[in-house]
Length: 196
Image (tube, rainbow, N blue to C red):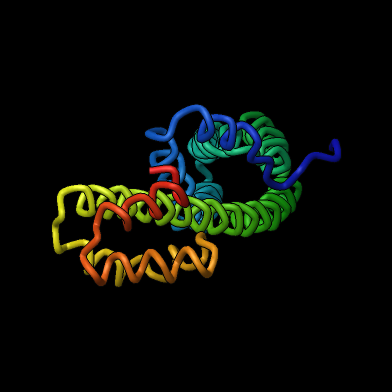
């Protein structure tokens, strides 16, 4: 066997980078595979115990296709080798040993995939949160431009963010302008600081 990785997500990451709409679907596919756990291996074992080697080989072929798309090179190598052995009705002891090896590699694959998935979901949540904050800043600018008193609610929500982005003196002047209802001056501070 070659020295391949347990889980190589670069293809997935490439797809995610190309299309935001595809990202959710890809993460859902990985989540489904992780949630299924060892079920595919248990089903293969059960088919072998029933002496249905061709059914077990078919299950392995399906597993191989799923895992190959997710970068599980070592699982794919073992699944392909086991599939060939089952198609030839190879020795049962060798088959059982390979299933045990496959199960161990599949567990490592699932663990790596699960860790990757957690990182991707955390990054995605952070991006969504960032977009949400930027949308709220845009809304604050619109309220200030329209002399809309909802600007105070948005200020309460965004105060920490605005304070972190503005120089201390600018934030103090911005807050003073807002509280004295000089919305156009307050808007100038927000636009200068945030680019909105």
